Length: 279
Ligand code: ATR
Image 1 (cartoon, protein in one colour):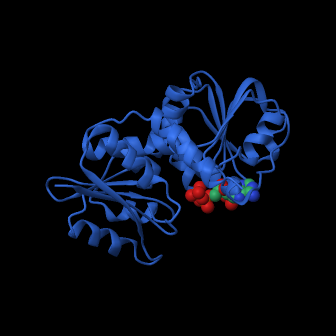
Image 2 (tube, protein in one colour):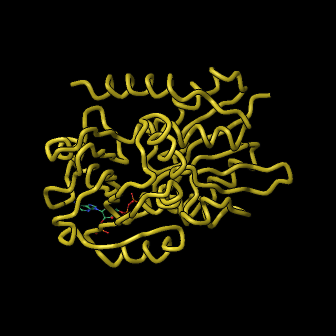
Protein backbone atom coordinates (compact mmCIF):
# COMPACT_ATOMS: atom_id res chain seq x y z
CA UNK A 1 0.00 0.00 0.00
CA UNK A 2 1.19 3.50 -0.79
CA UNK A 3 2.38 5.35 2.34
CA UNK A 4 1.41 9.00 2.67
CA UNK A 5 3.75 11.85 3.57
CA UNK A 6 3.39 15.61 3.36
CA UNK A 7 4.99 18.96 4.02
CA UNK A 8 2.93 21.35 6.18
CA UNK A 9 3.41 25.11 6.17
CA UNK A 10 1.75 28.45 5.52
CA UNK A 11 2.27 29.47 2.77
CA UNK A 12 3.06 26.15 1.09
CA UNK A 13 2.19 26.45 -2.62
CA UNK A 14 5.79 27.09 -3.70
CA UNK A 15 7.37 24.31 -1.63
CA UNK A 16 9.83 22.18 -3.60
CA UNK A 17 9.57 19.29 -1.14
CA UNK A 18 6.90 17.37 -3.14
CA UNK A 19 9.16 17.54 -6.22
CA UNK A 20 12.22 16.38 -4.26
CA UNK A 21 10.48 13.46 -2.54
CA UNK A 22 8.83 12.34 -5.78
CA UNK A 23 12.32 12.10 -7.34
CA UNK A 24 13.61 10.20 -4.29
CA UNK A 25 10.68 7.76 -4.53
CA UNK A 26 11.23 7.15 -8.27
CA UNK A 27 14.92 6.60 -7.72
CA UNK A 28 14.62 4.21 -4.77
CA UNK A 29 11.38 2.44 -5.77
CA UNK A 30 9.78 3.33 -2.41
CA UNK A 31 5.98 3.32 -2.68
CA UNK A 32 5.09 6.72 -1.25
CA UNK A 33 2.83 9.64 -2.01
CA UNK A 34 4.02 13.08 -0.85
CA UNK A 35 1.83 16.18 -0.93
CA UNK A 36 1.83 19.81 0.23
CA UNK A 37 -0.58 20.66 3.05
CA UNK A 38 -1.63 24.21 3.87
CA UNK A 39 -2.42 24.57 7.59
CA UNK A 40 -4.26 27.61 8.93
CA UNK A 41 -1.93 29.85 10.95
CA UNK A 42 -3.78 28.86 14.14
CA UNK A 43 -4.30 25.24 13.10
CA UNK A 44 -0.97 23.42 12.79
CA UNK A 45 -1.56 20.82 15.54
CA UNK A 46 -5.09 20.11 14.28
CA UNK A 47 -3.86 19.64 10.70
CA UNK A 48 -0.97 17.40 11.74
CA UNK A 49 -3.10 15.22 14.03
CA UNK A 50 -5.77 14.81 11.34
CA UNK A 51 -3.08 13.77 8.84
CA UNK A 52 -1.80 11.02 11.13
CA UNK A 53 -5.34 9.95 12.16
CA UNK A 54 -6.08 9.40 8.45
CA UNK A 55 -3.09 7.08 8.07
CA UNK A 56 -0.25 9.51 7.24
CA UNK A 57 3.22 8.18 8.04
CA UNK A 58 5.38 11.28 8.22
CA UNK A 59 5.49 15.06 7.87
CA UNK A 60 7.97 17.71 6.99
CA UNK A 61 7.25 20.97 8.77
CA UNK A 62 8.19 24.37 7.44
CA UNK A 63 7.68 28.06 8.22
CA UNK A 64 6.06 29.10 10.54
CA UNK A 65 5.35 25.82 12.36
CA UNK A 66 8.74 24.32 13.34
CA UNK A 67 8.42 25.43 16.97
CA UNK A 68 4.85 24.13 17.23
CA UNK A 69 6.01 20.81 15.80
CA UNK A 70 8.62 20.69 18.57
CA UNK A 71 5.75 20.96 21.07
CA UNK A 72 3.49 18.48 19.26
CA UNK A 73 5.71 15.39 19.08
CA UNK A 74 5.96 12.71 21.78
CA UNK A 75 9.75 12.58 21.77
CA UNK A 76 12.67 14.32 20.13
CA UNK A 77 15.80 13.33 18.28
CA UNK A 78 19.06 14.86 19.50
CA UNK A 79 19.32 17.40 16.67
CA UNK A 80 15.77 18.68 17.24
CA UNK A 81 16.36 18.94 20.96
CA UNK A 82 19.36 21.24 20.41
CA UNK A 83 17.74 23.20 17.61
CA UNK A 84 14.54 23.77 19.60
CA UNK A 85 12.63 23.12 16.38
CA UNK A 86 11.31 20.16 14.39
CA UNK A 87 11.22 19.87 10.59
CA UNK A 88 10.59 16.10 10.36
CA UNK A 89 7.89 14.10 12.13
CA UNK A 90 7.78 10.31 11.89
CA UNK A 91 5.01 7.98 13.04
CA UNK A 92 6.66 5.16 14.95
CA UNK A 93 5.37 1.56 15.09
CA UNK A 94 4.06 2.13 18.65
CA UNK A 95 1.93 5.05 17.38
CA UNK A 96 4.08 7.77 18.98
CA UNK A 97 5.42 10.74 17.01
CA UNK A 98 9.19 11.30 16.76
CA UNK A 99 10.39 14.83 15.96
CA UNK A 100 13.78 15.45 14.39
CA UNK A 101 15.53 18.40 12.75
CA UNK A 102 17.47 17.61 9.57
CA UNK A 103 18.31 21.20 8.50
CA UNK A 104 21.73 21.26 10.11
CA UNK A 105 22.86 17.89 8.83
CA UNK A 106 21.60 19.01 5.41
CA UNK A 107 23.93 22.00 5.48
CA UNK A 108 26.83 19.92 6.74
CA UNK A 109 26.41 17.35 3.92
CA UNK A 110 26.08 20.03 1.27
CA UNK A 111 29.18 21.87 2.47
CA UNK A 112 31.44 18.93 3.14
CA UNK A 113 30.28 16.16 0.76
CA UNK A 114 28.86 18.08 -2.24
CA UNK A 115 30.89 21.28 -2.26
CA UNK A 116 34.10 19.98 -0.67
CA UNK A 117 34.32 22.94 1.71
CA UNK A 118 36.63 22.29 4.63
CA UNK A 119 35.24 23.47 7.96
CA UNK A 120 37.65 21.82 10.41
CA UNK A 121 40.26 24.25 11.68
CA UNK A 122 38.70 27.20 9.81
CA UNK A 123 37.28 30.50 11.03
CA UNK A 124 33.52 30.66 10.51
CA UNK A 125 31.12 33.58 10.55
CA UNK A 126 27.39 32.91 10.82
CA UNK A 127 25.26 35.98 10.13
CA UNK A 128 21.84 36.04 11.79
CA UNK A 129 20.45 34.53 14.98
CA UNK A 130 16.92 33.38 14.15
CA UNK A 131 15.43 29.91 13.85
CA UNK A 132 17.35 29.06 10.68
CA UNK A 133 20.69 29.72 12.38
CA UNK A 134 19.79 27.87 15.53
CA UNK A 135 19.21 24.74 13.43
CA UNK A 136 22.70 24.75 11.88
CA UNK A 137 24.99 25.56 14.80
CA UNK A 138 25.38 22.07 16.22
CA UNK A 139 26.47 20.34 12.97
CA UNK A 140 28.81 23.24 12.16
CA UNK A 141 30.44 23.04 15.57
CA UNK A 142 30.78 19.27 15.30
CA UNK A 143 32.92 19.88 12.20
CA UNK A 144 35.44 21.44 14.64
CA UNK A 145 36.03 24.94 13.24
CA UNK A 146 38.86 26.90 14.87
CA UNK A 147 36.25 29.48 15.84
CA UNK A 148 32.61 30.24 15.08
CA UNK A 149 31.36 33.83 15.37
CA UNK A 150 27.62 34.55 15.39
CA UNK A 151 26.92 38.13 14.30
CA UNK A 152 23.43 39.58 14.43
CA UNK A 153 21.80 42.98 13.98
CA UNK A 154 20.25 42.44 17.43
CA UNK A 155 23.32 41.42 19.46
CA UNK A 156 21.33 39.98 22.39
CA UNK A 157 19.94 37.22 20.15
CA UNK A 158 23.43 36.23 19.03
CA UNK A 159 24.54 36.14 22.67
CA UNK A 160 21.64 33.89 23.56
CA UNK A 161 22.65 31.39 20.87
CA UNK A 162 26.30 31.59 21.96
CA UNK A 163 25.25 30.63 25.49
CA UNK A 164 23.12 27.73 24.20
CA UNK A 165 25.94 26.22 22.10
CA UNK A 166 29.10 27.22 23.98
CA UNK A 167 29.58 23.68 25.34
CA UNK A 168 30.09 22.37 21.78
CA UNK A 169 33.06 24.53 20.79
CA UNK A 170 34.59 28.01 20.57
CA UNK A 171 31.56 30.24 19.87
CA UNK A 172 31.54 34.05 20.04
CA UNK A 173 28.74 36.57 19.55
CA UNK A 174 28.76 40.18 18.35
CA UNK A 175 27.01 42.85 16.31
CA UNK A 176 27.91 43.74 12.72
CA UNK A 177 30.16 46.73 13.60
CA UNK A 178 32.43 44.57 15.75
CA UNK A 179 33.32 42.52 12.64
CA UNK A 180 35.40 45.35 11.13
CA UNK A 181 38.96 44.12 10.60
CA UNK A 182 38.05 40.42 11.08
CA UNK A 183 38.57 37.79 8.37
CA UNK A 184 36.81 34.48 7.86
CA UNK A 185 37.26 31.34 5.76
CA UNK A 186 33.53 30.61 5.56
CA UNK A 187 30.67 33.10 5.89
CA UNK A 188 27.14 31.70 6.17
CA UNK A 189 24.19 34.04 5.69
CA UNK A 190 21.25 32.92 7.83
CA UNK A 191 19.37 36.22 7.92
CA UNK A 192 16.03 36.45 6.20
CA UNK A 193 17.30 39.59 4.42
CA UNK A 194 17.84 37.66 1.16
CA UNK A 195 14.14 36.87 1.00
CA UNK A 196 13.38 40.57 0.58
CA UNK A 197 16.29 41.07 -1.83
CA UNK A 198 18.23 42.91 0.91
CA UNK A 199 21.69 42.47 2.42
CA UNK A 200 22.73 42.53 6.06
CA UNK A 201 24.90 45.64 6.58
CA UNK A 202 28.25 43.92 7.05
CA UNK A 203 31.57 45.75 7.01
CA UNK A 204 33.88 45.18 4.00
CA UNK A 205 36.98 42.97 4.12
CA UNK A 206 35.49 39.91 5.86
CA UNK A 207 36.71 37.34 3.35
CA UNK A 208 40.09 35.67 3.85
CA UNK A 209 41.98 34.35 0.78
CA UNK A 210 40.24 31.25 -0.72
CA UNK A 211 37.15 31.86 1.41
CA UNK A 212 33.64 30.58 0.77
CA UNK A 213 30.22 32.25 1.12
CA UNK A 214 27.04 30.22 1.66
CA UNK A 215 23.50 31.62 1.70
CA UNK A 216 20.97 29.38 3.48
CA UNK A 217 18.34 30.65 1.04
CA UNK A 218 18.17 29.85 -2.66
CA UNK A 219 16.94 31.63 -5.74
CA UNK A 220 16.91 31.19 -9.54
CA UNK A 221 19.84 33.61 -9.71
CA UNK A 222 22.72 34.29 -7.30
CA UNK A 223 21.31 35.97 -4.17
CA UNK A 224 22.33 39.54 -3.19
CA UNK A 225 24.52 38.04 -0.46
CA UNK A 226 26.31 35.75 -2.94
CA UNK A 227 26.94 38.62 -5.36
CA UNK A 228 28.22 40.85 -2.57
CA UNK A 229 30.50 38.08 -1.26
CA UNK A 230 32.09 37.52 -4.68
CA UNK A 231 32.64 41.28 -5.08
CA UNK A 232 34.24 41.28 -1.64
CA UNK A 233 36.75 38.60 -2.64
CA UNK A 234 35.12 35.29 -1.68
CA UNK A 235 36.46 32.61 -4.03
CA UNK A 236 33.22 30.61 -4.16
CA UNK A 237 29.61 31.47 -3.27
CA UNK A 238 26.71 29.02 -2.99
CA UNK A 239 23.01 29.18 -2.25
CA UNK A 240 21.07 26.76 -0.03
CA UNK A 241 19.50 24.58 -2.72
CA UNK A 242 21.85 21.70 -1.97
CA UNK A 243 21.02 21.99 1.73
CA UNK A 244 17.31 21.82 0.90
CA UNK A 245 17.76 18.54 -0.98
CA UNK A 246 20.11 17.11 1.66
CA UNK A 247 17.74 17.85 4.56
CA UNK A 248 14.97 16.17 2.55
CA UNK A 249 17.19 13.12 1.98
CA UNK A 250 17.79 12.81 5.71
CA UNK A 251 14.01 13.00 6.35
CA UNK A 252 13.48 10.32 3.70
CA UNK A 253 16.07 8.15 5.43
CA UNK A 254 14.36 8.60 8.82
CA UNK A 255 11.03 7.53 7.31
CA UNK A 256 12.10 4.80 4.90
CA UNK A 257 15.54 3.64 6.05
CA UNK A 258 16.82 4.23 2.51
CA UNK A 259 19.32 6.94 1.51
CA UNK A 260 18.61 8.50 -1.91
CA UNK A 261 21.34 9.75 -4.22
CA UNK A 262 21.00 13.53 -3.91
CA UNK A 263 23.22 14.64 -6.81
CA UNK A 264 20.75 14.08 -9.69
CA UNK A 265 17.94 15.58 -7.62
CA UNK A 266 19.95 18.74 -6.91
CA UNK A 267 20.58 19.06 -10.66
CA UNK A 268 16.91 18.48 -11.53
CA UNK A 269 15.73 20.99 -8.93
CA UNK A 270 18.22 23.59 -10.14
CA UNK A 271 16.75 23.23 -13.65
CA UNK A 272 13.16 23.54 -12.37
CA UNK A 273 13.97 26.65 -10.35
CA UNK A 274 15.82 28.27 -13.23
CA UNK A 275 12.77 27.65 -15.44
CA UNK A 276 10.38 28.99 -12.75
CA UNK A 277 12.46 32.11 -12.40
CA UNK A 278 12.92 32.74 -16.12
CA UNK A 279 11.56 36.13 -17.18
P1 ATR B 1 14.26 32.48 10.61
O1 ATR B 1 13.48 31.53 11.46
O2 ATR B 1 14.02 32.34 9.13
O3 ATR B 1 15.73 32.50 10.93
P2 ATR B 1 13.75 34.81 12.22
O4 ATR B 1 13.75 34.00 13.46
O5 ATR B 1 12.69 35.87 12.06
O6 ATR B 1 13.64 33.92 10.92
O7 ATR B 1 15.19 35.48 12.09
C1 ATR B 1 15.50 36.34 11.05
C2 ATR B 1 16.98 36.72 11.14
O8 ATR B 1 17.30 37.56 10.05
C3 ATR B 1 17.35 37.50 12.40
O9 ATR B 1 18.67 37.20 12.73
C4 ATR B 1 17.20 38.96 11.90
O10 ATR B 1 17.95 39.88 12.65
P3 ATR B 1 17.33 40.51 14.03
O11 ATR B 1 17.42 39.42 15.05
O12 ATR B 1 18.19 41.66 14.33
O13 ATR B 1 15.91 40.89 13.68
C5 ATR B 1 17.79 38.81 10.54
N1 ATR B 1 17.44 39.87 9.57
C6 ATR B 1 16.27 40.00 8.89
N2 ATR B 1 16.34 41.04 8.04
C7 ATR B 1 17.58 41.59 8.18
C8 ATR B 1 18.27 42.68 7.58
N3 ATR B 1 17.68 43.44 6.64
N4 ATR B 1 19.54 42.94 7.97
C9 ATR B 1 20.13 42.17 8.89
N5 ATR B 1 19.53 41.12 9.52
C10 ATR B 1 18.28 40.83 9.16
